Length: 585
Image (cartoon, rainbow, N blue to C red):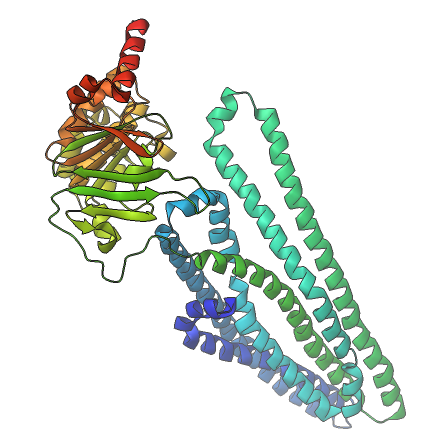
């Protein structure tokens, strides 16, 4: 499917309004076509006629009253509705397009976001989408109106003088050659400029988020140089596009100016010979402007449409990005989840060419059990728990929830049963209340407060200057690490999932915050199947199962006491951590 066919799906709901707008536009452009005829009448039939002066004046008054009625009383509302409908259509289409894009990117896998910069995605949704409006306003309306205007002008001109019309359109073939030669390169320059802009926005997005790091390492001067390089690249590509646009306009405008000179020469000669009247020549010259104005707009439209098509290509490219994680054809929703999880010979890697992250993992977790995953960084612990909500799909084996393959469960219902608390939970700009409501957007105020109390967050929230309505800034920058973590836990309390995943939930906190949060997590884990990825082994000694993973393989599993008696890998890790703790004391 071509990019324009894809775009047409957004235009189709408004085709009737597009048609009405085009018809109104035809009336709008048809009215000025009467002006050269009025000029011819006033010159030949009034000014140069032998009628009495009072008769001429009377006829002139009638003609001008008619003209004012046509150009002021009729054309003004037509102009208003034409502009309003045109902007209404393009604004609605952009609204639909961005909504569809946002819904689409929500369905893309985490792998997509790991491989694409956030700034570039935003650039395609905002800048490139905005550029596509020319396809409707210019391509589907203005182009046809200009062709209509040009056709009427040519019709009148051929009617008035066939030979003079041929002289006036002698440069048309040169227009066609110029457009064909110039616009292929213009499209390439436009796409290159859009990519440079997206790169610069991506860089800015990352640096604005990472400003504390830049300041802490005093890298302001280095970063200014890096940004200058990005900005310079954009400038060079923008200037290349500007030069090509300037060349295009210079050639087109030169060709446009040749036509009046040819008509003035040949038409003046015909007036001198008496072959056409002065009024007819003046009218013809006026129609020449009516001919070349739409022609010039058509050429400019080609420029706009070339640039818009380059932007549309980037938008459709994003829209056609395939979904990696999808519901199977026989997937069903789940409701009464017990929480039994089985990993049956599970193998997983992030890309087809990368090393295996998990290798033939065999593990059974009973409903209500607390299972802790431990081991060195990079062993596959976080990867394993991220497979349960299907953030990624496995290459071999089966993961079952209550004896059902998770691929046979709809993604929405599967994830609705899972709550996650991560080391770096993301909070969004907005109020504390709005962030807790992510757990359940329909929750009441009482339920929000209960969730916050359960997470040991109610007290500090109440002490904020505006309580639950306090704005916390982007990514929760106005809160401490422990406060952000407790809001994230309150969010999960509000969701009330059957399965709980805790991925390094307390490893980056101070001792006091860790104790508060650990108490919240123990309360949260009660009567739920809980999977814990832990770095501090002292926090998971209570687990029903502790699983040691090394290089994607389960090396040991059992209770804390069982593994300590084995004196294997887990015991060594535990003893090393305790020894370091004693030395620190």
